[in-house]
Amino acid sequence: MIKVQLVIPDIRYAATLSKQSSDPRIRDTLGLTKAQSSVQGTIDFIHFVIEAERQGNLCSRIILNEIDEPIGVITLKEIDEKNSTSEIGTWLGVEHWGKGYNELAKNEILYHAFENMKLERVFAGAKKTNIRSQKSQEKLPYIKIDEGVNFPEQHAKMESEAREPCILNVIERNCFLDWHKKNIL
Image (cartoon, one colour):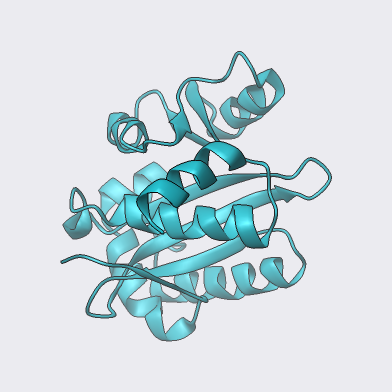
């Protein structure tokens, strides 16, 4: 049975995460350079997210599988306390695709976002060219798909950062917590 544990970023996971993020299917999708996906680049990223979390800008966790090996990263970023919103980003090592880890990791961090951080809305998105990410998000029973028309500023920001057309999806607090109460608790 698969399971995940989300842990605070730690440089002891840098080598494994570097190997996974160096795969062109991950590196290119994330827009990383070879230097950024190197072990040193991964260590630098870990230091960056630890400091950014201390400042309240994001919440990043390393995803461990059932045998406590790191398999990816999930992050709540662009945390906006005034509007009670955030964006979510996730990547998994290629060998862990299609096994259900993504949904389990999202369930855990979204529960944290809505219950502990008291967010009202978490935006998720994908480049229109990233069919795998779109399909992965469509599987989430609590997500609202293609909400760009309802959140035009957020959608424009996402497309500007990605430099290409994107799909904007949204997870809302009440919808997620209702689903969680019926399916997880």
